[in-house]
Image 1: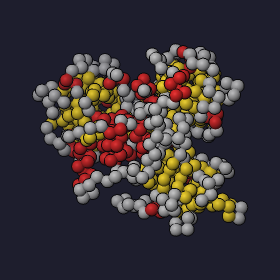
Image 2: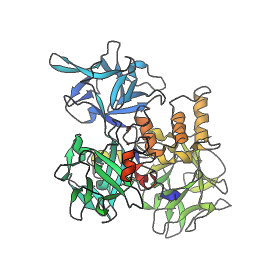
Image 3: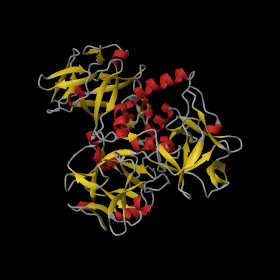
Image 4: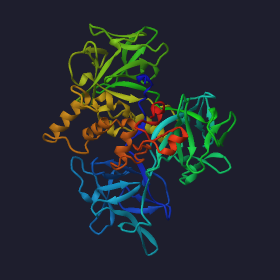
Length: 529
């Protein structure tokens, strides 16, 4: 396996969802002004909730209203209300929930379901033993990817009117999210990133189309890789068993796998980042006309870098401008750009207590540093040597996505649990490994900081504990999203990324199919086992 073939996935985090009562097709909503809950037919901002795991071992989670940041809670009588989230305090059991196979259960009420009762003709949310009219978690976030046809060198695109086509571009129209259905199956839904409500669907006549908020069987897919030297994965209808294909003119469904049914899935940010100083609004850039490494307040192509995993917790930074030179550090601490890849192009990432990471030359231990005026190297470990990695997303004209695009990179790798687009493939580089937490790594620094903050211990279900459990089991990016979003139920699809550590069924082995439910993200399909 070539390390540079491993992609750092682009995963939306924390997982967002609707709490849907499918029998009556209504959603739990909350009025941000007074915190009151009610049932709604809408699928807008008031109906969106976030799932935040509190204890990875028990699966206890908070369900936070996205528009108001209030916590979904149940009182002693089972009535549903919301309460303000208080920083630095542990939520009591009234605000704790367990999510298993899409069903929401109250911890305070012995895991009774979040349901709804009929009160004078109106549905009222309430914790109830009734298993018929209960809420299900309908995930709306996932792994952001491009779907390219190797045979046509084009990508799936959802245009301005929501119509499917193929495009030579790598823009926001071409980005799709893969969302785990969350019911324990291998089923996923594929939605447009730019058009949040557009869901990829198919009909029994082989017609392929997008539909607004369609969540029936015609929107469920299974992503599989045929064994052998495959150029892509197959996207199979979960209902009809046929395969998504592009014949050069239109999308159709085919009964068998051929070159037209293969798709190359790649990460939406294409491994590109800005390296930004924490204490100064500056980024590291490379001017190829002057062959000069510099610091800039801009976010353009000259400030963009591709990050490659080089093994042993090391990375390299390759400029995205024409020529693609590597960032290197000499013995004297001078920064240069070089076409030659060698030991001076290798960098270590270490946790910084100042809200980011240190970027350190592997060979010479010089730290990248910004003094506000320019770029330099230093042996110090202060805020001036602290950086964050900002994933670069493709542009799109959607107002909501543009607003979110501006906020990308607010969080750091060390705090990647809270990143809007969590680049979780860096977990191993952070030092969370099967052999434990690596000395001197980001992981070690995080463990030390958390232990000091908590009075000497590392909390079960905390950031360090969760990341280490993932590193130890080798779950990687998809596993992280599953662990953080599935209520601790490893082995079920959850958190917006279909993930099940269950191995291959006999049927899959007989068909020569590699399961999509592996320990790796969809963009790393080449390495599925």
